[in-house]
Length: 307
Image 1 (tube, one colour):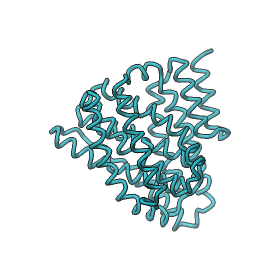
Image 2: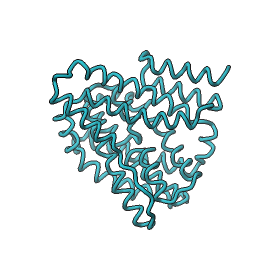
Image 3: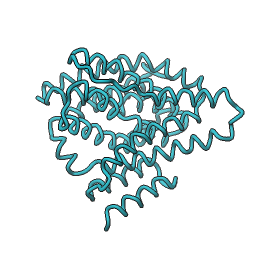
């Protein structure tokens, strides 16, 4: 079978709207593990753009008042959890003897927003290609697992829409996987998960600045502008009823774009990627993620943190 033809068929199916986000991710993983990706770098760039555009599109389906409420309520949880996860992640890295920069990137990706945080912090931390590949590979593998198992866990534990949205935002690495998992669970879960996760993503900037100061580097830090556009989309949906007939279509485009994004992300995980990750960084990532997932779930089910 021609890898190019298979890739384009998968892309078309993902964009058709006939498959869910978990299925799209599984299809991408099957492709990435079966073929040498002919468009690896192009797919990576496209997935980054599509993720941001899709999040903006989803904003047209959200009410600003609910977004502000969820963002405000989730701010304290985010600040506390980021601090705890960073300390725990770096400690685990030292105990497992993971290379210090890779350990920092894995902790940052787990604490904030996965690949986006690693991509922003990596250059200011002086990370090399291998360290970036190891940390990104670790996070992407765990993201794939989370997207598939979180909805099943949520349903089995009878989590409410708000509980599942908050748990996903606090315990799943990448924004794409948070949106994918919560969209599968329900509209309210999607709103809570997306809003809290995007508020979490804003911490990329202060984190990058702090690391830049410690490393004494002058590398330019990228601001996640798509978060502002997401907020503006919610403003339009709430206060500009004149264009009401356009908003559902734009929101649907966001959902479709996300499905394609997850297929592209899955297709980028190859056997080479899994080999590059290695045992110790993967163990650090798994243990850190398991602690975050279990502790936040217990706190949410116990009513200690809520939206």
